[in-house]
Image 1 (cartoon, rainbow over the protein chains, first blue to last red):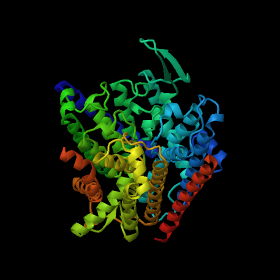
Image 2 (cartoon, one colour):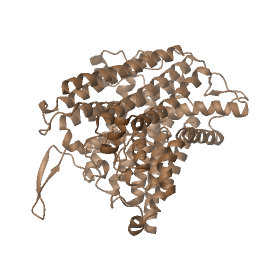
Image 3 (tube, rainbow over the protein chains, first blue to last red):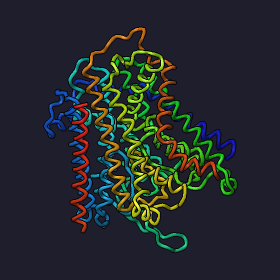
Image 4 (cartoon, chains in turn orange, brown):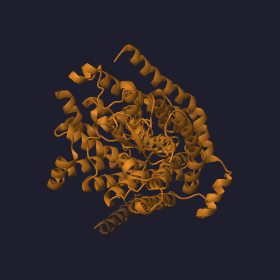
Length: 561
Length: 30
């Protein structure tokens, strides 16, 4: 890689971080106003009338949780049926019904904000399924994440309250006031930069050699915008953001990175505003920023220094990367897509160097909290903050309290269960894939492209991506098999909704408490020391949980070769 | 065969969400 390329890459990343810093206050404040405003917009009142909701009434955490469950059950069943009935739907481009296992996997995937795709979208799904099923879920699954995070923040902000807000209001406002307006602007920007937006279906093109090639069109830009903004990640095309119709230039690639980081990095400001102490938001965003920049530097350095004959000849590890994005444009996208719950890719993570590919995996294993998915990143980081406050209390004899709320046994049990559920799903899912003889035989024969330690990494990556609702893949793994479709579907669903229930339970527990005044024994949670403690706690929890499996996979591959 | 799979996957979906509902009840008693 030339010095000029290196400087351009650094400037691109620095420019995006600068824009994110400039967006922090206005976007974060706007989201805080969205969830504290008393007045409903006219369109929102229409929605509430249609679904029979009183927007002035608040819900207990149990009612909030059951609303999330009910909404999501309907979402999964609806998207499943759309796919299974595709051939009879309009604008389906003559495509057949989606097979049952794949339809289940895809329905769960999009409702859980994972957007794992075990299929080639352009040859599997018609426009009706893409629009009425997947694009709708891109908006509402992101809105569910934001709603749950806001409910937890209300738990910290409330005093002796039995309620944590109204799910239907939070859901609706997330869509009408945040996601739809921003996605509309982003779609126009993407169209202006060359991302396609049409309904032409497949177009026959005569190549210079006289052959006929079919080019797929479609409403790509509108889906691309919310795909990034809602940290969804499901591409209109199989190659995702490496496809020139989705992401034609380095400029659009930088814009897409900006879009997928914008809301997660601004939500700590919303948190600070709503709890009445902006400094708390700065502390949370500082931890997110430190971990994100460290991961970005790690993956960029490892890919730029890729060892071996082919990387040496190409100047760096260029396999699986687009020339128009280069090493650093690809590494920036990889670090951002796995730091959030997006999962879109502009390069193939399976082709990364062993240690370079481990970095995106570790970012997901951190729980995607730096900055994480829309909503899920903030609530994940706040759970870690509760753990850090508890650990800090044990270390220095401080009173375990956070933002004036006592961190008692109930809060720690809920936070600990939250921390444990995702690794449990990842490790048990991976273990079962190799422990059941018939499954292992099918996995090795059908799914794993690269046997040996890299094959293990492919399977670990898949379950890590599914349980953390990321959706990116080590694409060497063929996942459209009965075992992987079903197992990954189960892991995605439980990996999304069990943590959500624990978060809402914690919100209810915190909301019921009064806020106690801070004393000399209170651990300050807005100072650099707490930023350091929270960063260390996040990394240590991940390291202790996943080090053995990383040692068997990417570490073994990277250190042996 | 595909209709049988439809029933299986829809039942699996409902069973998984029922499990999540059980988590709600578990958290209530925690």
